[in-house]
Length: 356
Image 1 (cartoon, rainbow, N blue to C red):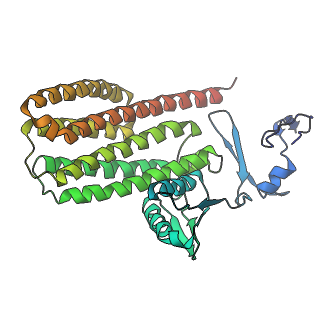
Image 2 (cartoon, helix red, strand yellow):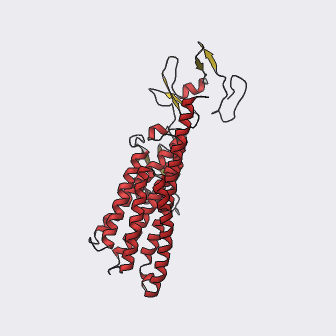
């Protein structure tokens, strides 16, 4: 696409424009006709302008959605495709932002297709089966991704993960029956759903199909740290599930040193997760140093347990606790990043307010 001053860009998404002044105080910039059509903007239409602290202006129609064609992903199921691989393909298409996912298969693979379709629907919010025939299934993304803000998703993930840790701890301490562990494992499905939901939100925001404001974020720059935060929460939940599943088959009482280990790790992880709400830099620094020391303590305790013969038998608890600490360290790094970004945004806005 060529701009008015003769410059061009092969992508068609970048043009150069000269700023015009009218009335002595109003600045005017024209937009390409093709863009106006794409955004359903006509003469006399109202548009919304959003000033971003990162230094760019976002323009969109105020009362109409962009004239975007439907995104359709075609996935062909071959006879040797495993359930896990097919599930990964479907979920990847969902996360990328496809509106419709078509599964094509031979009649003898219909059971595999239906099984995978049912599975991914338990993992992805708003992915529904809308059409079925002897050789294809059609899944449709129907969820409004602006109905739950990214921050609300994080808050919900925190509540679920903390409840999983708390209940697992009660079983480890012998305060609750082992049957509670089954509900802990099931709650991981909720964590996965929320994680994939916010993953898709951030993906679409990075593609420019959603604005940060629509997701409850101040700037797009928050995306990487928010993703790291929710990924860390999802990984912590996975370790909780791993320990819970092992305990379901372990019919003995855990030794005191193992219970002490999990109790200490639980406290540190829970306090760190709470910092996702406050973004306190001072507390994050303190917890960060404490977690590194605690990781060394876990390693030392494991070495001592090897002498008693419990190390191998109780390895899943030691390993799960160690991994929980590692993912919590990642979580604190994301919290620290969001804290610094918040300060940077304040500086940019202050600079804009003060003027040149």
